[in-house]
Length: 281
Image (tube, rainbow, N blue to C red):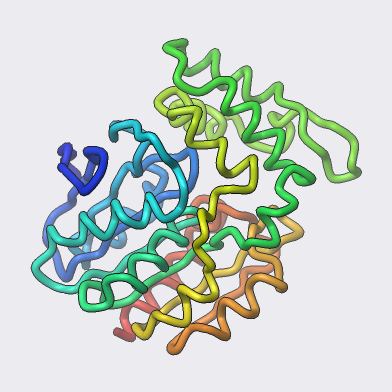
């Protein structure tokens, strides 16, 4: 059973979900557009052995809106929240959350026991995001965000967004995503501040943060999970290789054939990798 509460942070107030305290602290940090429930497939296994907390990032879910949505802003939020813990925590982040976890580990090393980065977006990926399916998808989601319309209506609109298909021809997003997944994303989009998507689309998202330079400041154990770029992964080799090389104590796992959402697309493989790494700490 997870309970939610609004917690004052350094900036906006953030919604934090907390599970039973069954072990050391472990924080889950979701990606762009999503909310803490995105980690649902992992929660039972992790909560059985860890004191899990999961946050809604600024502008997402039940957390407050903010004036700025650059990666360093999200990092500052998580650094502030880590002050809630009495012991060093493991940070597990997906996508944007992975960059946030990396930045927090670099800035507050005494509070971070280990960091897990699940397919963080690379700088090279972001530079060409509008040439990928993510560009029109995020633009379409921005147009639909923060509207008090029924979730089913938003899901239908999401399914109709035209994106580049496998052959390069435009296809509806609904042909690439299952209906249940689209409905969950629609629920996320309904509560999303549309301005959170703008920095990711205009190239300003990193806000001066250099993932490789941040990685060089991280000395705790790190797990880097790299999804398959051919299946929608956001960390191509040109970004993944220098990031891994900069980490002092890195375990890198590549997942061929698995897209950007390994925790939902291949939950069993993701849990296997997570448990192996976490049990080594």
